Length: 252
Image (cartoon, rainbow, N blue to C red; front, side):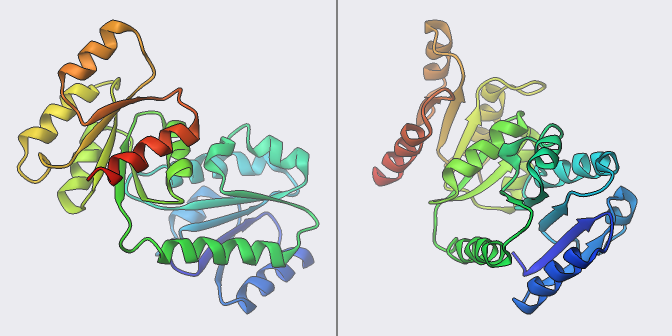
């Protein structure tokens, strides 16, 4: 991830300019933008780090937040969103874009030292990805995708696909050490995607763990019959789910 930031604000106020100056002095490239979808869409080489400074007419941010939400959940992309504002403004924004998709929030007045430390930590984690196990999470629920990424990214390089077809497209060009596959998805079910993966030479050896929200006997028997590496319940506590993934890789 490059040291480049899309900084969205309605006005270039003194405080906004001061924040942008601090970011540039810390070695970041700052690309300012209005809360305007068209303006952002026309940008070349859009940064992967998004800052939204919430102030003024919050209704003007609604469309932009929805658009940024689509960008950070795009399969195969690793983008992050930060919100800046007062508590009420942040709460209003999170009614449009779930908190699970927001990497951090900063309450005004902002301590720029905290912001820059957060950014540097993010980039250090990105640099540490090399050599880590790569996990592809496949789920049609974008909130579940981001939740799994948040749970697992401290230890693993996590990628997301919101459908079976997107997962197969991703794997045609990228390597994964493990696939976490939602068992129940529209269009192509998890079982159908599993069968497609096992039928392809370049994906048939990738281990698959099914994720399911159901623990009734019929569902469990159907999952087991497919013979994945194992299955995990989405309702598991985060630390238990991560432990299961850790134990799986230790056993390899």
